[in-house]
Image (cartoon, rainbow, N blue to C red; front, side):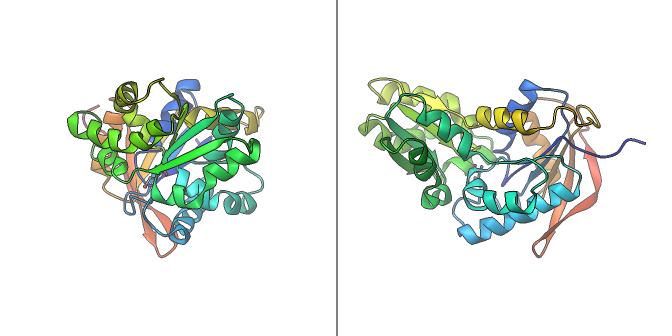
Amino acid sequence: MIIERYDAGVFDSGVGGLSVVRELLRYDPSQSILYLADQFHVPYGGRPLEEIRLFATGISRFLSANSCDAIVMACNVSSATALSIVQKEFTKKPVVGMIDGVSAKVANSGLQRIGVLATHGTVLSEAYPKIITANKPSLDIYQVACPAFVPLVESGVLEGREVESIVAEYLHPLARKRCEAIILGCTHYPFLLPAIEKVARDLFSSTPVIFDPAESVRAQLTVLRDPAAVRYNEGRLLFLTTGDPSILKYQLSLFLGKGDWKVGAAEWRGDILRRVAETVANPRA
Ligand code: DGL
């Protein structure tokens, strides 16, 4: 009998965390991942931090109960508000967030003026400025909240004039401060990278280095994971959403490429997340 067990449980408010899944699979395509998109509640970024904390702890409990050997908060605002709480609850498994790894990397990069693009919640939490300056106090950090980005990515609008003018609006303050680095402080934003790079080339006198925290998350997970652990269900991927599974199925083909994506549903009962029994295979695969 094959036990339904996963190397990692990965979650986000929506499709943003797929930028982290993409990085994990690029490094090791054989790992098994259970992904949870809380699309019933997307976007998280404008919600009270206390509410986001409840969602993040509820989802982490769900992933742990569904036999995930590690938990990846592929969501910056969840990491900013709930990482230490969840780490304290699950002391026996790796729980990795988006912010610590990339903050240390940026602090050691030799770059001085650092821009952070993020959601309102992450900006409000001050997690990036606090963690970066804890690594290196002398750095200058400039944050910009980008509320229009998540709705664009969730609806699959990743390029074009409208996208570029929104990107320009958010990059202007960082260009004025002559930022040398930009952290993509929301997992949805890497899907807008071509537009961000294009606009940055026009706006900045010297092109900034762009940091996607996914790479540091992947590296942290590799270090924390027990190399001797038994691997179950090699390459098994299951994507659950609290929204509409048929929409998620379409989004998966957009963000991870065409494939036989296995999709299913989960639903909230109060603060508790439950799996809805049936899963839907991709009929187009
Ligand atoms: N992708 C998430 C993050 O990294 C949340 C975005 C949102 O739902 O506002 O912060």
